[in-house]
Structures are given as structure tokens and as C-alpha cells.
Image 1 (cartoon, rainbow, N blue to C red):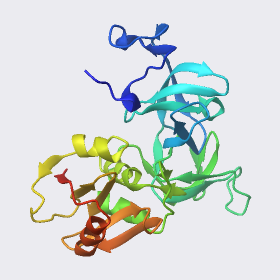
Image 2: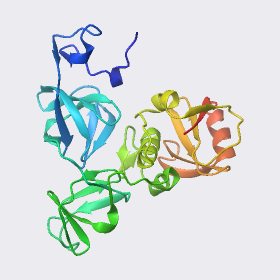
Image 3: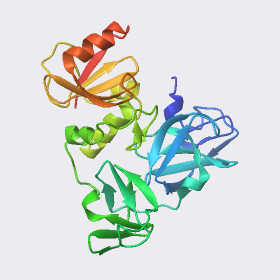
Image 4: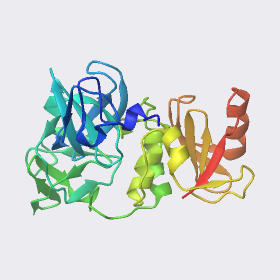
Length: 273
């Protein structure tokens, strides 16, 4: 059985204890639970390598190895494996709310006139401890009440996807500052309460049920090409984060199908959640 490197918490030095007998490593460890404390952090294939995906504040991980300034981790939400900056990790917390705006700000004092401490993306998770006027207090600062919802609140996937309209395309991006096609779909489906892996090829295998290529289109349907995924807003329009426009855009379905096929990538599959 071939294991997917992106979902297998193992390298040449350490592996998760559950993988003993399946992979070779110098040591097998149970791992240490932690949470992301930075607004956003990159998951990289190697300690100093390129970004493959991103994790947002409050995301839970398991640390299997600390090496230099990096930590070898697995994301609890989708199983993605890679290296993140150790400084971006901290103790486990139990978030109470998540950011529901495309982006929000974290203030050091209960006033939006103070200089913000950080920018938080849609999906970032925080612990609310109190309220000061229209701002909710967290251990890290204050966030506008209008930008937060309780953990477990479900939002329509199409509504979430449209929050990211105009967001710059970023390979491996998962935030309101930059996002890619699979990051957009994952954010939208997670907000609606669905499990969803991180990359488009994984989503094509695991999300929803397969559809005939010519099946009538329903809102929320997913369209897959090689290396790309888009979501139907309705029978005539797609929304996707695309390198072609370097942005998240709404595009006529028929036009997108013709354009992408002309680039050498015909529609490969469709799925419905």
C-alpha cells in the first residue's frame, strides 16, 4: 500500500507510533498536541521549503518532531503533514468562536481607533472571554463582535466562497490575504460542516458523490480539472480561485469550461456534497 506523503506523519527520523510496521523510521512517537498561535502559518514540505498549505490561528496539530526552528506536524482537521515554524505554535486551547468575515483585526485595547495588533482571516479560531462594547475580548486582544460566530455555526458554502471574491490567488493559500482553488473549497465546505481535505486531487477522491460530467448543475456542485477545482454558484456560474486571473472570481460556467479545456485540461470529474 502506497501512503500519501501529505497525509503520512513520517519522515526518515520519526514517525507516528501508529505507523510502526508500515514505515521505516529511527523512532516512533505519540506526538504532542499544540495549537497555532500566529494569525496564519505555512505548512512546508521541508523545514526551509516552499509552502504547500496554510494553517490559521486556533488550528490544532500534533507535533512529532522539533528540528531547528521548525516543527514536523500533522493538522488535526484534515490530516495534512509538513513543517511549520515552532514560534507559531503554542499550548492547546479550546476555541469558542471563529472569524466569519473574510478578514478582521485584533486590537490591543477595546477600541477600533488603536493600532491593530494583527489581521485575522476567515476561519481563524479564538477564545472569547468577555465583551467590551462592540468588541469581544480574547487572551490575545479584542475583535469586533460582528466578525465572530460561535464554533459550530454553519454557513452556506456559496456565501462563504463569495466572501473571498477579489482575494489574491496564492499557491497553497488558505487565508483572506491569499487563497488557492482548494483552499477556497475547503474553507467553504468546512464552514458548512463538511469534512474536506486540503488539495484538489484529495478533494476529487474524498468529497461528496461522483456525478456524470453532463448531469444537471446544482448550486454547490464541484468541478475538477487536473490540478484545479471550482464550485457552481448556480446553473450558469462558477466561483474559483484561479491563477489565470490571479484572484477569486465568478465566471460563466460555459466560458470557463471552454477556456480551461482550450488550455489542455478538459473537465475530469464532478462531485456533489
